[in-house]
Length: 196
Image (cartoon, rainbow, N blue to C red; front, side, top):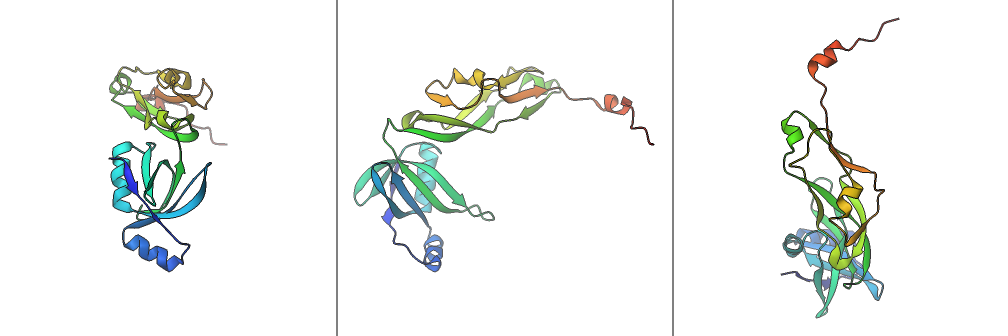
């Protein structure tokens, strides 16, 4: 179930926002090309339930004033200590709306190269993409299982699997590589710096 109920929020003092958060609410806004920006609040538990169901980039049916609007979670602010959500921004979308966003890169499995003593070096943890609202993937997955030492995955390697979106990186950029590890004996054999 991807429906989220929102209520109108008046511009209020910090003390009132603090009470709203203590009562389990999150202040936020909803905006889009064909609507005025609206101040809202939602229940924290409801938002977490919906995100668990549709994913970080999924389309949410936001019910406001008895009307439903398709939105995505565009941005949010977390408390640096408690990690609680302090504020959320929703963008009103339709299925043909093209959106610029970031998508996480998830590495799946343990590579053959790691088992042989190699080490994984991940250079890109998020990718900038443009896609229609319905085509935004929850994340970019890379199956590492069969990769040997020396194997590198570049942007060009993942573009084929995610053809519904435009990945806004150069084809030759490296996402992840299974690198060699220098042995301890090699490090010991390296000449030390000559003291002057």
